[in-house]
Image 1 (cartoon, rainbow, N blue to C red):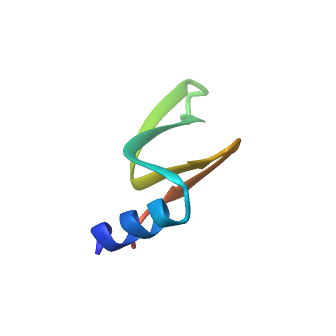
Image 2 (image 1 turned 135 degrees about the vertical axis):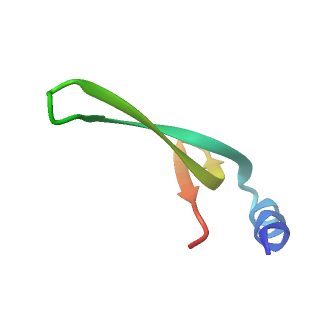
Length: 55
């Protein structure tokens, strides 16, 4: 399934990559916490960026 999505993104002239994104938040103590979320695709086209994750 991921191969189909990847090929379709390439056909539509998107630059697709697989990756992890960093999300920052605050813990209960007020400390800054970094979480890493895995995404199936990070898609770029010009200045636009999309994150695609399969449910």
